[in-house]
Amino acid sequence: MDTNVLVHVAGASKKFCRDLRRSLRYGLADTAAELIGRPASQVLRPGEFWAVHDIGLQVRRGECVGLVGRNGAGKTTVLKMLNGLIKPDAGRIELRGRVGALIALGAGFNPLLTGRENVFVNGAVLGLSRREVAAELDAIIDFADIDEFIDAPVQSYSSGMQVRLGFAIATALQPDVLLLDEVLAVGDVEFRAKCYERLARIRDSAALILVSHDTDQIARVCSSVLVIDHGELQFAGDVGEGLRMYQDLCQPRESPAAHVHVAEETTASLDQCDDAIARDGFFRFALTLTVLALVPVADVRLVLWDEQGLPALDAYSRTQDWSVRLEPGGNRLACHIGPVRLRRGRYGVSIAVLDRASNRHLYWGHRVRSVDADGPVTGAAAYTPDLACQAVSAVHQSR
Image (cartoon, rainbow, N blue to C red; front, side, top):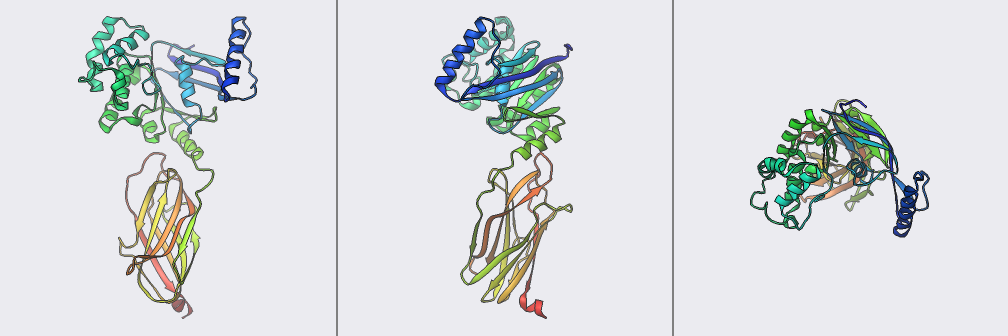
């Protein structure tokens, strides 16, 4: 194997059993088979499933690979196999040099020992002498910023303190291979900035594998991406292309149920709604509203919801003075908003028309449509584009 290849995985697979009793029975049978030299069975027994199946990768010194996938895809299982916490049922895993890992919150810590004692224990596990660990101790404490608590039991630490100490240990002891699983998820802004700086410093001399759901973080740190879905490797290569595939996998299989409310003595219908953001960056929709009495000033509001159910865009015609007048009878409202710059994904569309005088909803359609945005795979700057509206009444149309 090339000496610059520090991580080599070929056909690694791991299966688990959903039933506890069967799992214990299978474990005893597999242990007995291993003792007599029989290979592990590659056939799934009742209740078993492949958590990871036939995964292969190579990571060279100076490379950082991002491992992405939906929850339960098998990412952490891969890291645990690489770190030796669990043994693969098939395949081969080879790592060269010293391995530093931060896979789970508090992993590798004895909660009854102090932070200082845990630093020395972790150093011993990595094969370092007490003198070598002592030489790095002050730098570890300074990076973790827990000098006041270093002699307190780890069980009294907050989750953020545990992550800071774990990351400081894993990166300060000069690992050749560094495995990180959602390390920055509980870190504050200052800590994340320190982590990015340290990862950039050690990257040239180590092979890094980073698991994260944060596409901005993956794009910033990684040189390539592996996409895993249901334990199977779906993609390996370019960061941008890999993140686009990951975001496509994260699209909800079913859209949340739509809800439509129309005011009394009013009829309304959504006649037109783009299903994708146009090439010019604009999103267009049109409604027909029939009202009995004149509405001198009506406002239109548009909300686009992301996959997490959070508003990604909230635009209001009143803000840009694009309000409309609704005549008695039928009125067609043609609206457009843009330029829209959203990260790649599918968004739920909610549209409201309000009578400004009474602040009453004439129409409220919550998640009545969905729209695809083919934007960047990482974050876009927050902003509110113009929402322009034009109303044409049936009286004007007949002239």
